[in-house]
Image (cartoon, rainbow, N blue to C red; front, side, top):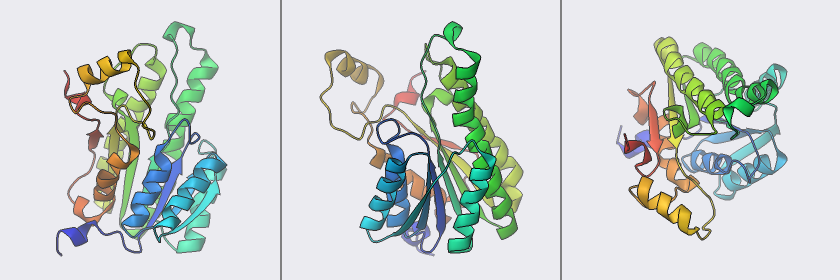
Length: 257
């Protein structure tokens, strides 16, 4: 097969799971758009209506086929409903993309048990439930692709972010473990790690400019479009020999020791 043809997702069925709102988690619409542009049929499972509507709109606007459903990804029944609806509509699920992160910053000694459980529920339990539901179907099909969107804090510590760091590390290790467990079933499980991203070109304060120059070698914030090529790679046939890997799209941030 010609190299560029390996990147096509023609007639593949992709579920894109998105947490948060358009203000708090900007990636989901761009993920849906990228998959649709590569030829996939997209089913968006979002916690909020604004994320669902914008994701479906962007995917359909470029000539794709996209549908949406509201979902609490921490609820087992909701997750099963997502896959039932997708299978009823499309007949199979080839790709799962989990953009299930809610950021949380607070001094660890001040974090309550309820807050910690909320962070781990929204960021880890949700990914567990979505991956388990997808894996069951993909094993029966004999193939599949799963991509978990994580933060670079999966491998780095940050003050006032211990709970969030722990949740991202958990998803990274889940990604690696599932790659080992499901590789025999022709299922690839990988992750895309992000750094400092924004969908808006807002002027930076001087302190932000200093941080950007100091820590990001490419000297700019990332835009959600920057992860689209990696997503298409990890969900396509070109990813046939890649599994269990995080790919960091961060302008070089993770290159720092």
